[in-house]
Amino acid sequence: MHFSVVIPLYNKQNTIVATLQSVLAQTYTNYEIIVVDDGSTDGSGILCDEYAKEDVRIKVYHQLNKGASLARKKGIELAQGEYLTFVDSDDIVEDDYLERLFEALQK
Picture (cartoon, rainbow, N blue to C red):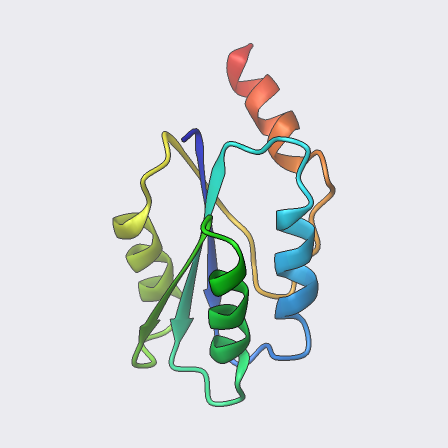
């Protein structure tokens, strides 16, 4: 696996589905998604669990609220990809985001 896409999550129920869908729509397919739910209380972590049931590339880790920095650190610890990238839980990425990153890395 080339990429680990780490998504720190805290109370983004209104945006996390669009974020996950944009990452899942990638033209480059050799990646995993690691969502680190940092103690969300709005159900956004549960939404991610539902997505993980449907796609084996998605892994969700739940932790008590420790802040974005420690959520990112946990994502790094869990990552199995050769390369690491972060996407915020309210971001929408272009469908060729990972493909462009991979091409840049090859140069």
